[in-house]
Amino acid sequence: MKLKELAAKLALELRGEGGVEIFAPAPIEAAGPGTIIFVASARFAPMLTRTTATAAIVAPEFAAGAKCPVLISANPYADFARVIDIFFPRYRPAPGIDPSAKIAPDAKIGADASIGPFAVVGAGVTIGARAILHPHAVIYPNVRIGDDFIAHSHAVVREGCVIGNRVTLLDGAVIGADGFGFVESAGTLVKIPQVGIAVLEDEVEIGAKSTVDRATLGATILHRGVKLDDQVHIGHNCEIGEYSRFAAHVGIAGSTKIGKWCQFGGQVGCADHAKIGDRVLASAQSGLHGEIADDAVVAGTPHADMKYYRRYAALWWRIPELFRRVRAIEGRAGIKPAE
Image 1 (cartoon, rainbow, N blue to C red):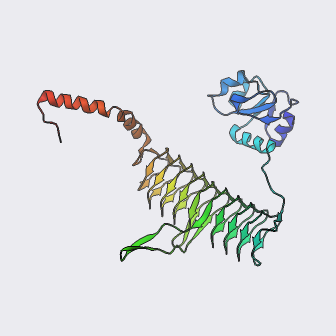
Image 2: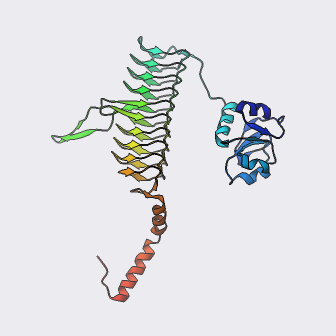
Image 3: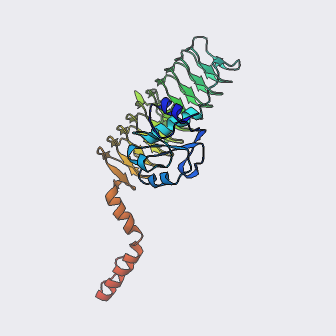
């Protein structure tokens, strides 16, 4: 594809020769002739003076230093993602229902759906247009799903759950499994019935092997645009605000409320009934609890403000040395060491 054609598809300003051929996008460190790269930060801008890439998508302030033709973008990373979509269209099976799929007689499937081998759609289910159920996906009874839904292999949506438009479930994701609720009684554990549902609003994506538990009563809710990485767990009766993103192995205990646009690093754990504000950033392996204000940046277990945590972390490795020095001072002063 010629660069000028790509510029037209992306609706971006072209500076330089538009007749050059682009064959693929590439990371900046592995670029070569025929590739297009992107530069969004000053850290990588010097590489524009020596890259062998044929073209680059750049922020306006980096255009002058480039030795190759450039496309000017207010968000080079996002536009580079669009380039990847153009050159590598996502796999989409042809519409139709495989003969081995099991569809309940009263299920309603929208136009242009693709239902793969051994997929199961239960009684009373409604699925919108252009849905894709890959092999072995299972939709339990009385589920309602919007348009452009994608369930990859072995994804499961349990009974009564509600899913919006343009929702994607990656392989093995489970929506609406029972919440973890038991009470001690007469020397045993009695299961608390989990009779609520899980609700995923529009544009939610659930990673492979991730789980969103149904509520004990009411609903577990993931609002619009929430993104979960692989192996993330959302407990019963949680509510996750719009466009929040959680990396792999995050675990959110029940009845936690999390605001909009939050970002949690890998293995963050959150205690039950916590209340997390909007745009909270939690570093990997943080342990969250209680209430956290809007725009907080936290780290550590239990969590602390990032500025405090960095000072604490810097001192952590010096504790043995400091202990020895205190003991030496006590010895010179004739103070008996504490037990």
